[in-house]
Image 1 (cartoon, rainbow, N blue to C red):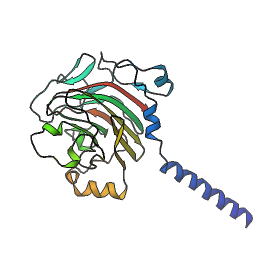
Image 2: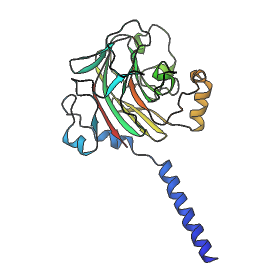
Image 3: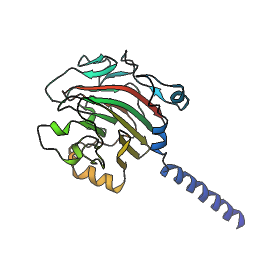
Image 4: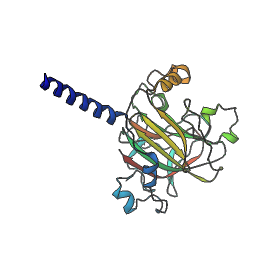
Length: 253
């Protein structure tokens, strides 16, 4: 009887530890503090390297990136003055560039700058498959948009800093058109934190009751595979408007 009780207790303890590990999450602000704000453009400092950060763009080559559902880098993007930038016009969804690698839990950092009426975003947990035309059909989006000069009325979940079509930003620390903004994204299992210019703008738990309610009652009802994948590529969105990206860094968690 004592042996059974001990085995039961040990089994229960292991279960508690496993459940605790699954539900635990890293501190996004601590991850954010690992970045060196004084780092030269498109480089990693010794501090960042020691903390496990990787550089995804050196400002000169497109290594590590390709067009969505393509094997090559698309000609609707170019490298200009140390940035990735779009060259298409018309405000219609174009061809996104995505990371060659897929990621599950990570922290992602990038600077972006908008032109007037820019519409773009960082999309993650993306699945590549010919049955999908755009990355947004499978993965959530950290919205980038000059909503102040957008021609149509927007919902609060469409404005800059939102988790598009899901969570509106709880703060609005965006900078004006023509100035650089800093986007920071942490995906830690089911826990997602979005930061903009040092401020947390969105926090949510994937697969929570609230998340499921929002997914199943809004825009994504027409996209059955949206939010289905827990790992995937990360994309920079081309929406036919001018946007610039630089200082792209990632840390796998």
